[in-house]
Length: 317
Image 1 (spheres, rainbow, N blue to C red):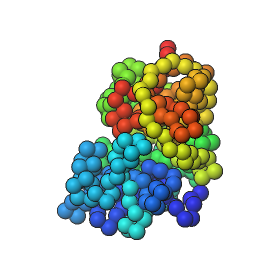
Image 2 (cartoon, helix red, strand yellow):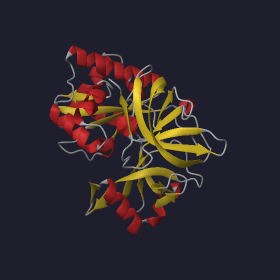
Image 3 (cartoon, rainbow, N blue to C red):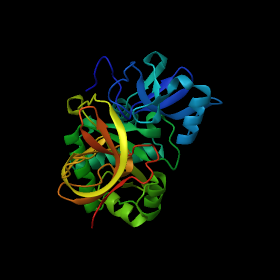
Image 4 (tube, rainbow, N blue to C red):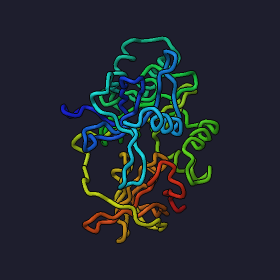
């Protein structure tokens, strides 16, 4: 499942010689061979502490500028680490197997065992599941979510189906209002709460098990990853209405939609708020930034910056 010369996948974590833990965000190395990632944890006084986006950027800019890069093409900063600086590679699939085998009696481990059993009961296959987030590095708190990875589009489709079936059976619970509002506040998207909740509740990629929120995120298999090596340049903002023609890659990262629009027939989504947002045949309103390459191909980007101010996808109801 992993490529031998570059065994890093999105949702893996990597630890550096300088006491930093990054979440991997890309399938392929940067042109200079570095691993594209984003800083999540720093070691302070012998323990790991989670950092916000602003804290991560400030820390790297001030103390680790070799990990903090500016990309002219996207007009934004990004994080990347040389392979030589990596001292530990945390892999979700192995972490899940290890924690399930340990049969720990901690609250989160008991709920993890329960969740995996439920997902398997309704059709998911644990061979394609992994554990990411705080539990991947053993840093979960009482309020932490359970973050699962599913490898492969078809396996992810089955896992979403198992969540939906378990919700219908009452074995899992939908997000309560507090959990949904927490999700809404963390995403800081452009939709109001009612619109956000409606879209989110039909994705079947998150729910609650014994009072704890969990979510499932997809990582493509190597054969499913298509690399576009073209260089795109930002053009102008655009808001338009269209129809979704193909949503088969709606849960990829970046998510990809084909739409019925001659100007920007392809929409790429780099903000998780709008991953899985729409289905084939639905009429949507999209706000984003047009990009164009040297060959004249245009596409629309939702999430052209980390804040994605003013950018969104919403189904016209």
